[in-house]
Image (cartoon, rainbow, N blue to C red):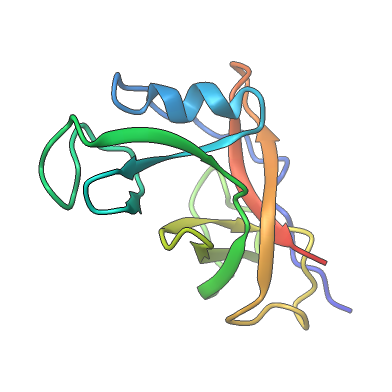
Amino acid sequence: MTELNDTLSVERALPPMRSFSAPFWEATREKRLMLQYDRAVDAYQFYPRPASIYTGRRRDLEWREVSGKGEVFSYTIARRARPPFRDHEPFFIAMVTLDEGVNLMSNVIRCPLEEMRVGLRVRPWWLALSDGRHLPLFEPDR
């Protein structure tokens, strides 16, 4: 089996935390995945926004915890990268469709090349950031 690099040793810049994304990032401190949910249309949205992508209203949004499980919708193998990922190639970049129906782009780690495919079931794997938050990556859900 051929395992790609996991990019776990890459020093990543801290993601910005804005008022409307704070609940998402604060939950990652406890390795929990929170998504915005629009009660008016019974649908999740990702990435965090100040208003609903469906209705344009703020008052219909609430935060709900989700499992983070889903499947690979699409992926690529990065064979050339810019800093800070240079010299960590090759690695997977994937669009993951969570079970709640939203797409999240991230790295898939701990996955042999032969196992990666569209439709692969994945679960979250939490990469610690320097400020105590965690970045959601994904690994095969075996």
